Length: 323
Image 1 (tube, rainbow, N blue to C red):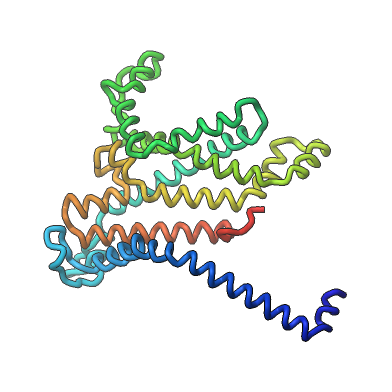
Image 2: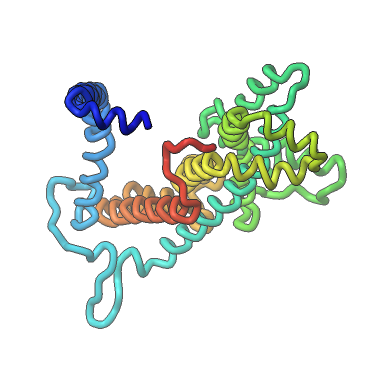
């Protein structure tokens, strides 16, 4: 009824709408003015290097003479000469690095999500010292990755590492294990260090989502006698699904770019190389800027594809209310 009244007073309504529309346009202009400096900075520090890398991937540029190169099209990616295929897409080492990266991302992010959920549920409960515990769990995340990788590299050393010494003392192993030198255990060691470092990040994001949930639902479930496990799967998990998927996407993006952790722990070994380590090897060790740029461009495309698939599968819109 009130809407009809508002329609009846058409002249006044037009003025009000005009004022609102003008105010909205003014707010939009102000928002763009505030955002514009950030967009310029992002374009300079991210957009320009990305465009430059994509351009170099279509050239035969070398690190020895970056000013002298020729446009060669898609030859760095895939080319056929006399019936034989060349290019990065035919390189077994590239596909092995892709497999290593995807395996590392899937295993580490899955473990971090499960453990982060457990930690967040514990920290969401009321107990003495909860504030201190919330600060303590962030310590591994606050340590720079290169520092934590070097620290764990010393702890996992087969001769002088404290991990082997501890396992020998309690009898779980009969001889020291070269955790980071053996291809069978090196990636698992990298996963362990990554989980140790980033579980607190996942717990923090999940805890923020848990604290936004309305408590009256849980009080009603308690009155009805619903078990805590059923409440978690039927109430808590669906309500934090959007926030959880955003956290998983953030961690997946970070994990798929992994470089320093694997580079320090596994000494640039070919068997454990990630996509970023492979691109760095082409750029620096072999000085092939064209091939290295093609590898970097493929990393960008693979990560973008994974994000699109994850958002489509989870039907998540970034920025929407998780409830």
